[in-house]
Image 1: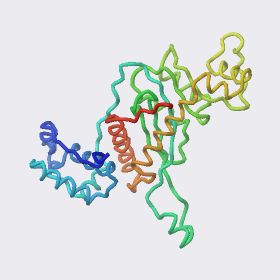
Image 2: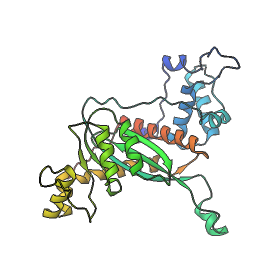
Image 3: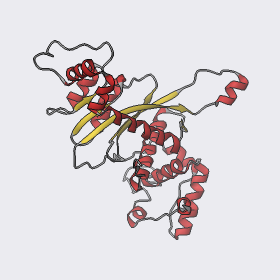
Image 4: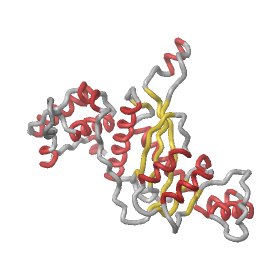
Amino acid sequence: MPQRGSLTLWVTPEALAAWQAPLTGRRGRPPHDSDLALETGHLLRLALGRSWRPTEGLLRSSAGLLGVSLAIPDHTTFSRCRVSLSLPVTQPQMTRPVDVIMDSTGLKVYGAGEWQREKHGERGRRRWRQLHWAIDPNSPEILASELATHDVGDLSKMGPLLEQVPGVMVSVTADGAYAAAPGYQAIAARQPPPAPAVILPPRATAVLSSQADVTPSWRDRQIQIIQEKGRRSWERVVGYGKRSLVETALFRYQSRIGPTLRARTLPAQKTEARVACSVIRRMALCGMPVSQRV
């Protein structure tokens, strides 16, 4: 459709009023640019896949076309202030219990590409960051996200992610990297009984607990299903196939935002990942394709 390439911008009166930073009442020069102006630049930069200079030019031309008087931060201000940018915590307002699916993906840190390494040889080890997040399979909401270094395991980020999930959880689904005692403990600490259904694939060497004959846990029941019907049947019974939706969401992130972090330092990279998740969430809320089997 030709309308897919159209660009529509509008500025609300509330945004105009909050565009310039308010006076702090403290000594020294007050900040000129508000967090709203800086966040707007970050959102447009990541959504359109541009660098800071074209983003600054886009904002200036948009303000001129809209006929509004806005002080646009320059590209150096955007780059310098992204570390100290305080983004509001925008948790989705869930009025119903949610299913939680968790996973992680690697994002490369800015550096030399594969062509340079192939031509000039290896120059140090490649570095990357790990983006952990949780989604709701029944809506386009990103429930939680966390960026960490590559040496931080998935299991250690399970608790911080669950703390960001609002409301009551019906189930928690993840791959085998989370199927350990700390994972079950993090879920139990996050939500008191009635506990959510924990859909974590037990390891091939998993055994029943000592209380399996008296009071079997959710993990014991899953192991029993696998022993009786096989792992494929277990996946159909518990609905483990929904875990592919979080991989689809991660692919949507990498295809829209990109597989590489543009920031150089870890605090700036955390801000970039948080804004990128906000971009993906806003774009998904605008509309998602509806697929039907024919």
